[in-house]
Image 1 (cartoon, rainbow, N blue to C red):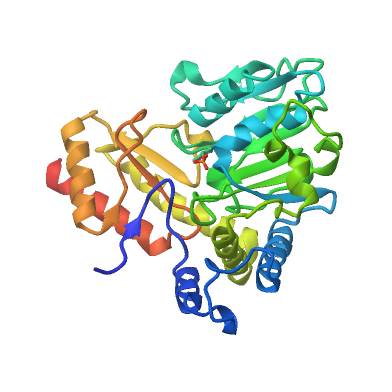
Image 2 (cartoon, helix red, strand yellow):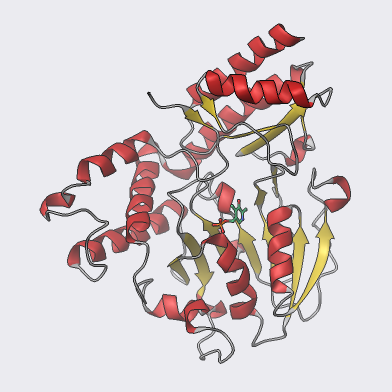
Length: 364
Ligand SMILES: *Cc1c(COP(=O)(O)O)cnc(C)c1O
């Protein structure tokens, strides 16, 4: 069987060029007679891999020198805990959360285990189908940070205008939009994401943390492993890291550079998303679930206008038979969802739209 078009929200499609390179290097990584999965994380070979990966992501994103790049295990979910533990537990024990979907909600609930987490904005009143106005929120005077999930993977919304945090550091979960477009890192205190959405294989999170937000004292009530300082001081080699994943992400960073960087990625991503949204908007059978101005370029949820569950099930089954995988919507939204990350070629989106048009003709 050949390659399918994989519209999974994560783990998700990776660039074919990267997979081929990894395949070529699998038995013998550059003359050392073993694969990256077998080598010591303290070896010269791996040291070069992790240093190059860090240098390349710094280059691709334009990360200023006063930010640390941390390669962490435990996924984005463990970072939900690390944020309050490192940024607030030893300070005012208060932080503000903007909840625009289930990932922001999970992070908010987790923070509440350790500090006072205030929900200062939410779009749950309309099942997270829009982004509220974030220009003048009731930011708590002594909040240690303001938190957003910038692209909500399940609901398919993106925060396009960053909140006015009234001087508080902004913390952003960007898992499902990581490296999909240029970002001004200096506007954030922390940017982080699990890599398995838009960057690499599952098993790694990357956190970009402004240095002054990394506590320099030992935090007695925080496990050593969950302190940012532990990983910052050890250059992400405090213990055995996910070597294979760092290697794969490093290849993706180089792939992005070869493609023309994040500006070019953004151009391509907008072009792909437009093809799909334009089709949905003129269709009689399908409807997008998100307010137009808040739509994500990465995750595109849609339903049948008639809310016909049988027809939606048919769509998923027939699209799969036609070589398009994982178009079933998340259980909390239903319908369909197409995740069209960096590595999804334009041809994949065109094939999906052609399929939708045929499907519509057949069942109208
Ligand atoms: C998938 C996802 C997560 C959870 O990631 P894990 O690495 O599985 O913990 C968190 N936030 C967002 C926005 C996601 O899309």
